[in-house]
Image 1 (spheres, chains in turn blue, orange):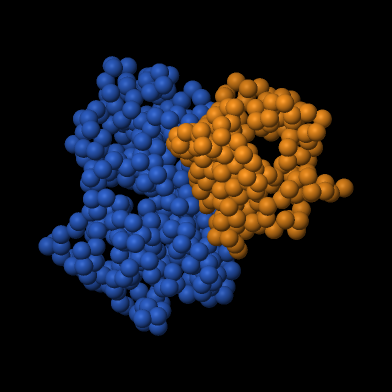
Image 2 (cartoon, one colour; image 1 turned 60 degrees about the horizontal axis):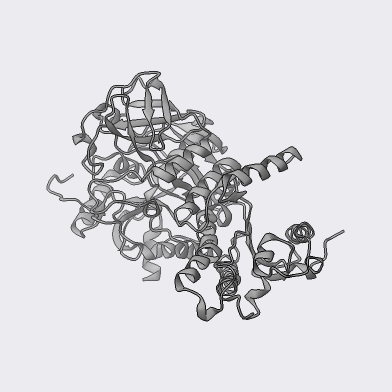
Length: 356
Length: 209
């Protein structure tokens, strides 16, 4: 891996029309770049595309602790069996890199957090993993918490972007279940025009829901534990569509590492067989992981050393991944959530040559 | 159920619950752009999967309804926001569950003012004509995706809105909203009856025995 490679992040979210696609074909052992718009042409009829239909919450809320100090509260898990876990960040511009923010007040069980509407949330539990990771009781129904977040919250912001993100900016076109606290951003090349194009080509579409979690908390020790265990729900019809696809010799493309974690995590929990249903996964995917359910991955462009890059490395040999990323950097592809995209899928080079 | 004013909304929800129904009440205003996603998120969290979305929220705008030539552009915009853009936003926010999930139905409540150019019905009439076309366009783009999109003209009903529009109407000439609702349920339960993209007059729709 070259240390000289200079990676650049997008200063503003790239649109589908602007997005470039780094294509890696582990079967042919080749990689190339193309326009993200061409993605539907690269897949074979009979393949299945699985997307995460989580809507992204305005998960960042301005709050005060009992000392009166302002804090940023970031929702880490939006309810479900684990309850509502939140991370507190110290006062400061929320677009300052999280690691440069002041430490939050150390809160304990029973402490109150003042919410923007004047009501209070109570700390129920402090994580052994980090003093700033807290389980809270909002004192209202889950739907009322959502109403509070949509009324007063904003999406989690990224310090490398030039402008604040609005709720609209962090939604995927098909996001509907309010589970994600950061955008499942791998879906960005898939607008409805692309989905319609996939359908017309005879490529199946299926959904699951995965509660995409926080990417940064400002606490190095906690950041090192990310991603935290995350909740998922795989509909029976999706598990069946995957089985049908494989039985017919088609391939399954996971859109985003969240989809990989949900599908592979569910299979691992059931002796290697995908059964679907709801669950939580703490599966970490890296180069050594052998995917059993997923054949290919659509993701962002991730610089070597990041956890997302390690997931990409599970789908292609390390040398090919290295070559592809050198190529991507040279071509000026942009990294992080709002940059360009990577497709790792066996057999796409053949299709690309055929349509060229 | 979604409505702007929490008090009557909760009262109506309680009335329906007392009759054995499962009812969730969400306070929100389709005329406020930021409310659509909040409503969609709350509804999805409460119900799990939205299989039927009925767009019946609607406003006449300024009362008494002015002549088109006297209508302020801002009032026309406000009517379009509630009657057209709000339903568009809400469908869009729920589309993933409808078009990539198990499918579902989107129903737009229209009016004969969408077809006829009645003088004095300007803003409302324009918004309903556009809503009908929104319905047809959703149906055309979502063909094959398992979503049925309909527009239903309920006819003239004995409602507060009708009284606002036509204060001197003879109530005996107006349809009972409960009876019209029954017809619409019949339409929804008969998938062969009206294909996606259809505009249906409720008065002409027979309730299946």
